[in-house]
Amino acid sequence: MKEFRFALKQTVPIFFTYLFLGVAFGVLMSDAGFGAGFSAAAAVFIFAGSLQLVMVPLMASGASLLTIALTSLFINARHIFYGIGFIEKFRRMGARYPYMIFSLTDETYSILSSVRYPEGLDEDRCAFFIAMLNQSYWILGCTLGACAGSYLQFDMRGFEFSAVALFLVVVTDQWRQYKTKLPFLVAAACAVGFFLLLGKEYFLVPTLLASLAALLVLRGPIEKKEGLAYE
Image (cartoon, rainbow, N blue to C red; front, side):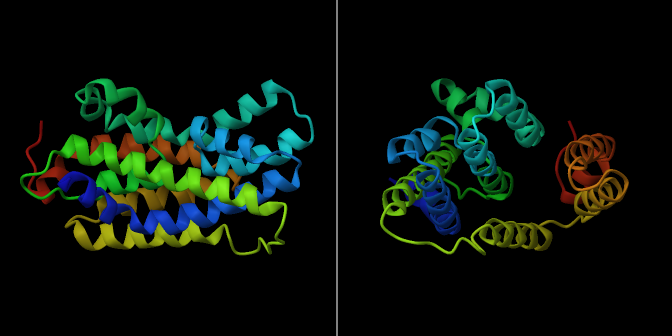
């Protein structure tokens, strides 16, 4: 299937990142006393890398459901902003609409927001396969890590940098691909400003809000520079 092969090529970098980070999560779950079934279920029904890693010590310490829920909301609030630009695209995908909302992780968003589909391919099918493949990589990593955690000793230092490296590659590729650098400069200015003002614990959500507002105001000049029709 052409769409599946295309999606597979786009997600190869995600495979290695999700495999390593998923293994790290599975090992942490095993060390905390949770079996492989819990790790696999988390990968299937939660599917949020940073949240899952934070969830392990919360569960191990017996944190309340309210504490876990509020932590989840705080960590994953950025996905609200990610989804805004894809509402109409996902809605037209019919029965796949709920899954596309659920599966919109940072990495999947990065691919879907920058991918260029060749002529002759069904874009909706490609997008669905990209999301599905990414989650399958994460499920595989989490399950392998949980199974191996009981038998192998892992040095966890450096695992988390895989995601940082992936984002650097994605941002660099988008910087080279797009004519206007305004979105990057706006996001960088907002991030630095709120980081200095609020600190690393609280800067993310205000940064996303301010960046979204600024980009909506600047949408016309940005689309004109990119040669897109302004609607």
